[in-house]
Length: 290
Image (tube, rainbow, N blue to C red):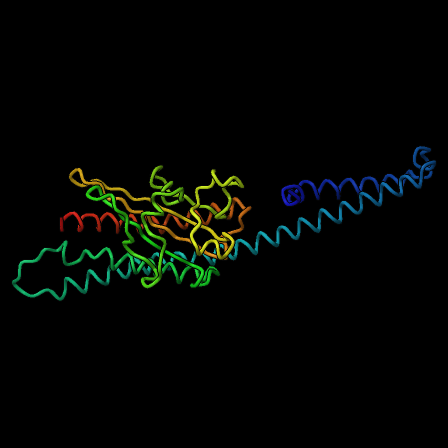
């Protein structure tokens, strides 16, 4: 609230102008005008208050301008790193395509979709680059978890299609998707969900959509979560996926900073879009296998 008030340029200018005019009035007509000469202690207090407000407004405005400049520089640096992250993902895919097609045997009939389409490999590449990006952002590798849940209309059984930590014991996928979880909520709405604070849904337990895993409980539900649902129907068979990125013990942004949360949500949506493309290809391969 202080920033929204004192960062206004007109406010510090108005205080400075008012202080100058008031000082000039006291200096020039202070001895001639009775309403000034007869109340010097009062005008002394008023002048002191105006001077204090002027110094305060100018100082705070300078501080907030410096802070905005600093934050913008940090955000620009983060954005450049994110651009490199996206370029690395594209480069990895381009390199794989090139290596595959240039090493084909001469005269052999080729199914190019089978040869160049390896969505799981690309998904693991995206996960690893995401880890590198968020470590640059300040989130330790040990505090980050990335998973992809999957199911189809054949069985309606949920499983972990890909995980960042393959040897880690994750909460059963069916428990997650059949509970009041962010992943389930995202799938039901068909829209990505980002919660800057895992516990931001309120104090009433019945209103929370975050399923408390054992790991989240150990860190007092401190952290952030992003879920991106992906659904594709191929020849009347539905393939469902949920891409989830969770931090434990640290936030992706200040929980109460809406602007910062929107910026992070935008970056996460960009990652989610790359994952979505690979999940479409994965669904095609899985459907072809069936």
